[in-house]
Length: 121
Image (cartoon, rainbow, N blue to C red; front, side):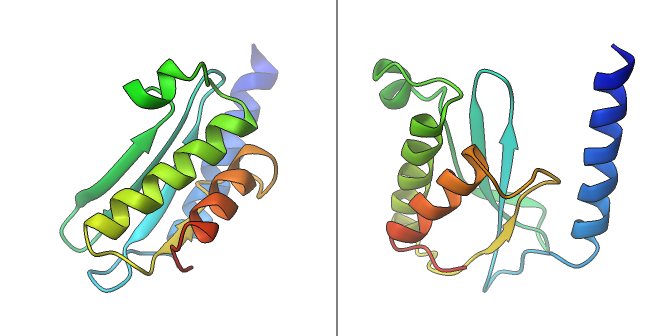
């Protein structure tokens, strides 16, 4: 229990350090990722308004029906879904916020799938 708490605190410290520099504007909103053990979530946020513009997660019905959870395939599907929703909302460029997680595994899969689907960051 103690090690898990320490790991979370370290991630939150990294998150604060990155968020000092990475902010979403109306022209380039922020794509942020949250990773739980069972699912992965991504949203595009305009920090000036404090508003979520687009969101996607592995818990949404189309992705949940495919049997995805918190694995790399789910992250790839969420990245593609987020990019298509962003395109419909008229968002082409974003700033990537990995939320203190290492750019590896599921976070990397989500980012690469979003890039491959046409989102620029």
